[in-house]
Image (cartoon, rainbow, N blue to C red):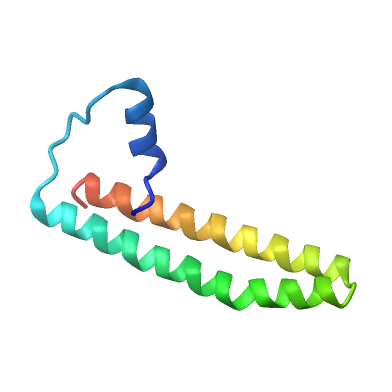
Length: 93
């Protein structure tokens, strides 16, 4: 299941349809961008979640919170880049 962009979710909520028709090439690029960023997010989660668990198990709550914040910030940055790249493809750039 692919993650939906905020743009796609907004269209669903409003019942609107995109005025721009995407070419098969654009659709393929969007799918590739989704795949790449989903992998990057999963990579960061696989790296940091075990460290968070170890810190929690050791009673280092503050360290665990810092790592969790780092993870959330990195995921937010990656999602922002994902949306930016997808918008470029949609705009035909």
